[in-house]
Length: 304
Ligand code: GLN
Image (cartoon, rainbow, N blue to C red; front, side, top):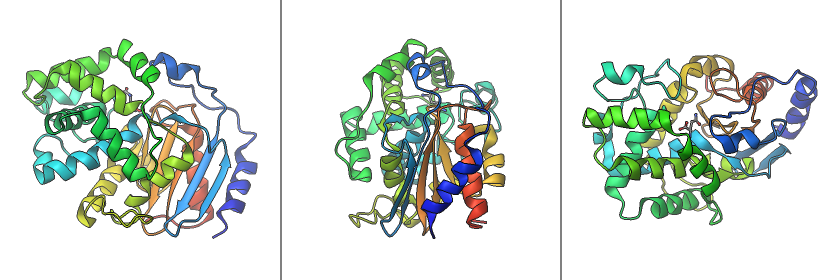
């Protein structure tokens, strides 16, 4: 498949569209990013690379990192993990509080903020040096020792982290957070601050297109069953209250972040990362979704 030609074709089609949406500004440092950045990188399971635009520029992957923390926690906790977090689409915004009260502090899934905070709590319980061990895992999965946190972004988010503080306090009151709240929040903000380029991001997620095995190193990151289940959760919950629409339009499991990144997986074929910081009302990259919609339309290939 000539993905390069398709990327150029899609760009021709959308390059004159009116800019759509706003850069996330509730995290002050994210509000400073150039809204017109646009990058794409596709890595095939055979190791071919296709890129477009600002694909070598680092950005804050934000909630996309929740897939990596979930993978790490799932390996440690096994199926017992699902006693503390569900696997159902939320149908509510990423930072919503409403369901937690009805569900006794059990978040609907691991990709909304509440769920990712519970996963962070689980990792803090298991790891002696949570931040160091998490970034070591991310570097291992990505085959890149340079991947790192961005302290500036983590601090910026912490300075305005009232909503996440509300979520974690509510869950603590129900007994679903076991560790000190400040320690878990610090770990969570660092997780969200990880930076990658589109190229690094698509390479990092390739293991989910290859049933848990890193195609380059042949290392098993997840069992086949766990990789399938994480893809299933991405399909159903990767875009918050826009997960249905993403499935409908794009037809691939994926995950977004408020930094404007999206990663999507085509099992047995490729992993693709797109980055465009302007977000729609649901907190997902507008141009990123449009690009992926056109990609699966033009290639006539999606998991459906
Ligand atoms: N760090 C962000 C937050 O907690 C992550 C949200 C996102 O990327 N959707 O609000």
